[in-house]
Length: 140
Image (cartoon, rainbow, N blue to C red; front, side, top):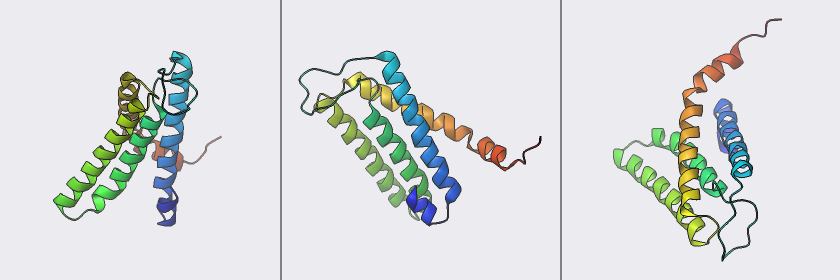
């Protein structure tokens, strides 16, 4: 957000920050609705509930944000592919680490992946409508 703000892309900065914040609120709402205990034998001390994985969700939204801002700036197709592959690798490493550390079940990270992809697609499908709504004058 700060980099986008610094590059005078204020609307993008606010949009992606809002996307991450509201999305994580959605994760918390689901966590406290499902109330799934974490796996036993954790390798790291972690509290709270297991489903869905907040780390996975946040990583995916952050990675998608980075890809959405970086890929259009790539000049060569090979650069675009490299950036996308790095994003996929990063998401995979985070998902694997959450399961490896016994902080989450496999279904927790898969659920977070699907939730993040769905949230990204839903929110971005409404982006233009949201910005048009913000620009309308208030009528009383």
